[in-house]
Length: 319
Image (cartoon, rainbow, N blue to C red; front, side, top):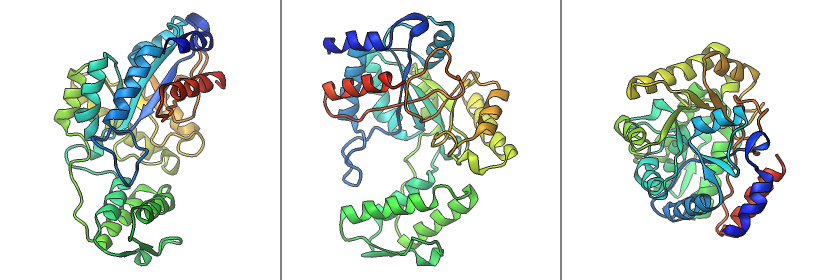
């Protein structure tokens, strides 16, 4: 996509005026998921990596953060990041990244390693796998969660979205209790292999990827006390550093919306713990003066290269 390089270079030049585009991903599915047909699968990711390699200079995150502060980034600078620590990051994403020669950073929620499951996936898989024609969640006693029709894929998707939206910002202990109750009510057998194992995290690092901190249990930090938030972040870091035998220096806020999912206290804690950077999910691109503890991230999910390039340009233009 040679035509895109000139406008991208104008929007993201080398040196002190550079802008850093950081892309965010979560999963790379082995095949299309009927419940979530817009989720990235391996074919999508293969294409995206090809586009990124042709349009951008993709850097390891640690180098990019250092060079952004120093005003020495190359033109069209970009980073690739993944949140949460799904097993398909190892089985699907890593081989594709290696084929394209692209580095990436993977932020791991350590509480789900080795057979764990994130709360939202408990909801998703409970609804996906239940054999009941209607899933009755009235016993939970939560407004908006009643009886959900399971007759079609679209109805199941609507149920998942409603449930997740309703319990997303509940305190972690209560949220976990509710998701366990949902699994019991669904009477479904749930998977235990969605997230990476400790061995797979080591393999990612040995494969040339960087590993970052994403808390232990993926809480909404804004709902926690300062002490609780600090423990979530510091304990995750300690687990990863013990696992890898090296310093782990980069952090991603769970969910990551400024002022909603994390607050000023969250940023202060990350800074005090001595991280080199932290990323959020505010759209945009980072400039030399951007707070390195609130670096924006963006990802277009376009299915064609021209639209992908144009949306990346739009994100740079608005930054």
